[in-house]
Image 1 (spheres, rainbow, N blue to C red):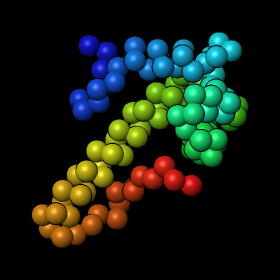
Image 2 (image 1 turned 45 degrees about the vertical axis):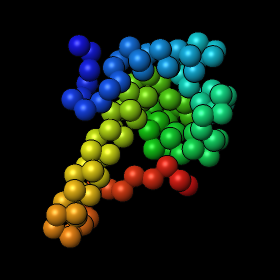
Image 3 (image 1 turned 180 degrees about the vertical axis):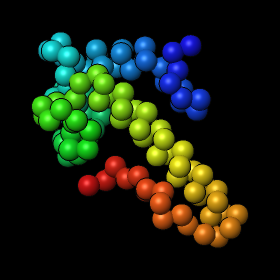
Image 4 (image 1 turned 30 degrees about the vertical axis):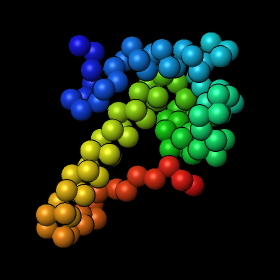
Length: 104
């Protein structure tokens, strides 16, 4: 129960716990400083996440935006895996499948 995707082994409680741990000032938003505080991601990666996922343009990520990141990335990865499988069988690449990269 509580799972949002059949292949995703993360539920909303896991994301809530992560969000609360990262939200040091308890304002309900994650700043670049909070995202990078433990060294899990670089400032460049945090800024890229904000550019891609900060839907309300606050310069911070709220819980809904974090959920979108987690589940959105899962869908992209699933499409990439399906494309890789199709390529291995048919030797073709589907250009409609976006390639994910966390690099700048």
